[in-house]
Image (cartoon, rainbow over all chains, first blue to last red; front, side, top):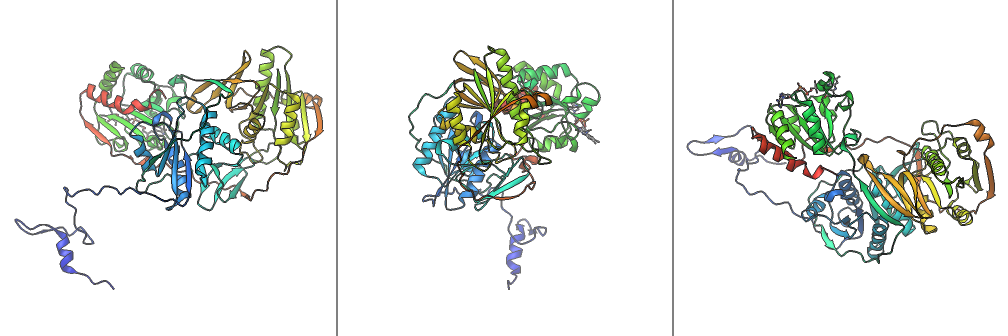
Length: 355
Length: 241
Ligand SMILES: Cc1cc2nc3c(=O)[nH]c(=O)nc-3n(C[C@H](O)[C@H](O)[C@H](O)COP(=O)(O)OP(=O)(O)OC[C@H]3O[C@@H](n4cnc5c(N)ncnc54)[C@H](O)[C@@H]3O)c2cc1C
């Protein structure tokens, strides 16, 4: 049995003793209030010096930053590794601040693959070489367009089977759909696994160390892919549910020609709230929200949109939101990563002038 | 040009009855477009290793005129059979769907075949053109992006769902198509210890972003210029991807 200590509880409630004793009785449980100037403990970084085994996580890091799927891949590798094994993240070259991002996502080591241009044959050869060098127990890939392609190339090179598009993963069991999605296959996690997007949770614990390892040495041989060029896409033609960057106009916008011009100049796909579509100012196809399009964008710019629940449903998965609104108490402001209390028209004009 | 289209035994996702895999029919349509585009000497052959599954035979009704059927046990590994047929037929281009629909559906076979025959492989094509002695391929990427690749011939190319639509089914063509039947090479596939259960729908992760992940930055009544500069700085990394 735990004895109460009324004196200690009372001491914990003390806010100040001068000029008179003040107690904070609403603060239940007796834990003392932390002072504002108390030093914040730096998160302890987890080092796994002598791993029981290794798990590889191959990430795409398109554009030099980790996306959601990349973090899920590292999270899946973390799940397979547990506390005693190390996660080795195989990544293309990243800008200097990105190793932090890998450690936060749960990576213990990084191997940088020197592939400056799109060359899946070379990437696959390098990964196969790293697999021979380090003999990882598992290799996890993202089941994305390029990630899935790379996973199959590595599987063919190493003559291993690929557990493609896993939807559930624990250290003892992996599950994936098969036979036209009518059945699911369950197995102990094999060596090569690719994970479907938005199925396996990213890692949220204390950051890991992400120490660099040497790059694998594989001789460059001329491949069958002679040339590759990525074609520029016109943002206005991307379907709204696939667009990476969306700029949307709400009831606070009055100049719609200027808005569409800004979207074009910014390289963003235009969207709108329902009020704007109902009024006929922009076509219905642009409507974002519960009764419009649900976005998969990375970034969303809301101009003069209040953030009604039906609208917020359409941007539920968007990570980065910029809101420009005259009302500090609009719901979208609470959801935004960058909230600007200003007239949307003026900011639109200033933005257009800067492009 | 000699084109082979790999066909697999497809199943309907809802009813489970035999039905051709849609991307493989799109591959046939793409091959036919290539044939009209090129000299009329192009031959297009369907290739299947397994049993005469109705879903494979139905491909004849979607524009294919000849089908080579290599009889093997459907549970066998088709790699050796297909590789031997490719050595014999010497195609310039092999088309396949990006994933099967009705079997393991892992999309691995074209890659294993490419490795076995030392051919280059490219995924997710939506258009193919000859480019001198090479092949020019337009690849579909997520978010509406496209990539143009040049591949050495002979090559294996898998087709994406965004490719032009398949030809509609014609019963007469299905009846009059030629089927060459030959024995395949029996190669029992290594037993995998997969447990098979009826599919259970699992919830997708809801991004933990219905709450802002980073503490939001708030600007109260800035000048339009500072506001615009802040927006640009924030948005910069997402532009022109
Ligand atoms: C069944 C149902 C389904 C719905 N589905 C959808 C849907 O799919 N999508 C959708 O969007 N809505 C949908 N709605 C409507 C939704 O409830 C809201 O009415 C709508 O989203 C509001 O749009 P808004 O934010 O543009 O307009 P308002 O709510 O009028 O907000 C305008 C905002 O602009 C600000 N503002 C005004 N002037 C300026 C200025 N000069 N500069 C900057 N800011 C300014 C205001 O402060 C305000 O916050 C649905 C409603 C129902 C009932």
